[in-house]
Length: 304
Image (cartoon, rainbow, N blue to C red; front, side):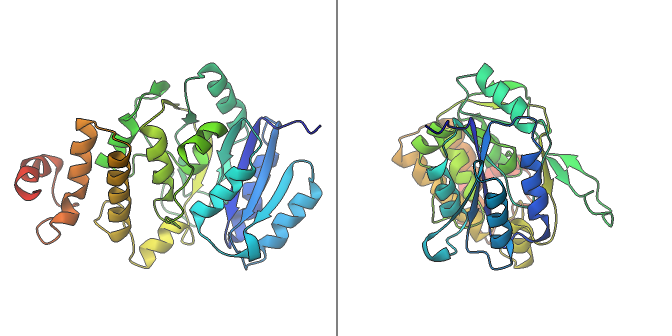
């Protein structure tokens, strides 16, 4: 009988480019070794399919190659769900194909989830990584710097933080969660093929379960022009802190989710109403120009 691994590592990829092997090697060099690696192809056409198959052939007992029927491109959420469906581990970790894990990532995160059985997931503060490029002029920095960490965070605190400031969320590659809970909450909504797909899962988790936030740094979140957010910015589809259709879509999804599940919380409702305000009154409101104290004064006038 095959022994199940402790951790399932899910790496989805779509034309990941030159950073792919570096990401995969950061799994192979983990100090924690009781893992399986699921390489889930979302219809790549850049040669990464062959790279993923080679890794699976070289490590057949630990690495599995997966793809959608017909090799289709179905988007990030459907591809993460495919990986989750095949995960055999007690815990599931996600790694984006251009990020990089520090060697002690799994060791320390598994220890924390074993120590805090009430936590659905654990995450730390990712390094926003510019210095991988010798040509950069931007310094590295840590996200979630204002979050009081090394503690359990009860629902819905993390959702409220994000509704106030959308940069206030863990990076996908920083996350380790209990597999059965990811399945229980339904994984990812496949109508979100790219932007904000992570917020679907976070909303489902952060409204139902405690999570453990650590001050540790386990992930290097690589900044480069070809990643999902930068490409959306280049196309004019998204900008952090601005009212845009992708942000509106996730806010409306959160609103429906809360209503459908009868999750009533005055603080969440107020934060969500504030976040929706610029979309209800786009001619009057620019989210980057109005401080929150102005939002609080205007919301009762403008939101009817």
